[in-house]
Image 1 (cartoon, rainbow, N blue to C red):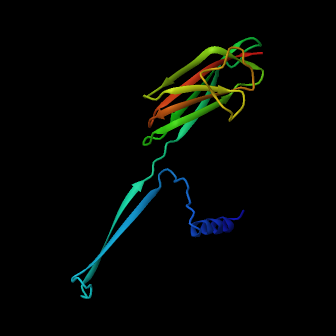
Image 2: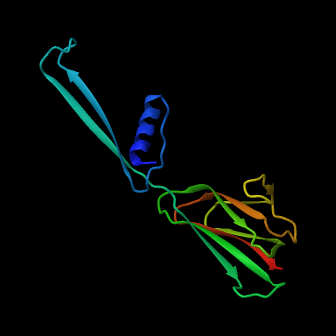
Image 3: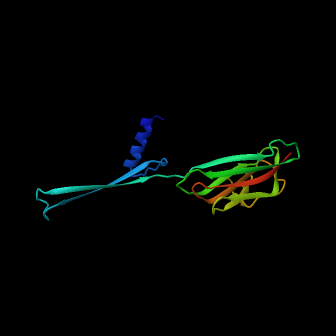
Length: 176
């Protein structure tokens, strides 16, 4: 779809009464202006009329989540266990992130080792663990049973991650 077609569709939607939404880029400057006019008499007919304008600006600050995944050890034979650690860091120095969801698929030819869930948060947020055998399907609370093999999806939700804060979750899996 061309840019002109997208603009036309957006204009039609606005004319039809539908709202339009978009994400605002981090660091954008939003300016809001207000105006007032008054006159020297109640009829508004005196030539002396003055208008005043005032503006307020807001800098948009969005959280920015960076993910890193590490496997320890990086070399292992069949039957050995690997610990996977997933770091989530809010690299914004201004904005908190809420309800950060991390989904990790259990690798093929591996099985989950229970119990193995570990967590750490540099701040006051709390991780909630869930799992499912299908991506996007209903997730069960906690961690899967020992020996569950792929495909399996592990999901963690971090309720709050402050500016400049980080946290990790980890799990173990055995190579088949």
